[in-house]
Image 1 (tube, rainbow, N blue to C red):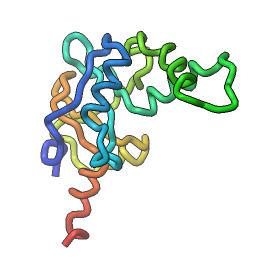
Image 2: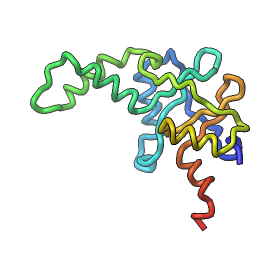
Image 3: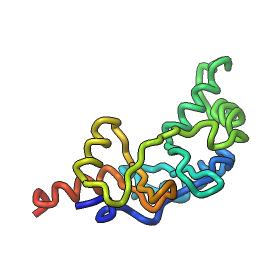
Image 4: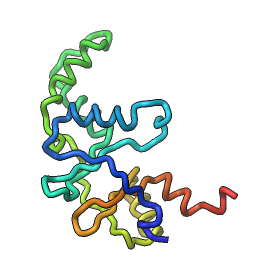
Length: 154
């Protein structure tokens, strides 16, 4: 089997120049209900030419929020007002300021065993599939598992 056999072609993307606040809205829109609690939410970040620039995961945004907390006095009770202050520090940043610059991708003809090795080595939750530098799909860790372990499901 190859990457093209299991990739998802409806790839959630965002421009690297978009504000972080737009990215959070898009994540909530695509992954914000209970049915996605075990999904691997994230956005593929593309440049102005539609080429892979990086990955924006919830962890990327949480990291940026925590970095913004440095220098703030922590109240004894972390309430909505405190988290609003954290958000104020990043909501006007661009996605490229907080994204993970993942240069690793695969082509459509990559063998699933090679893709699996990338997932294990780098602990990825998703790997973009590219033709040239253009994103044409994405492989999620769970899809890879189910493709490789199909006989376990019978």
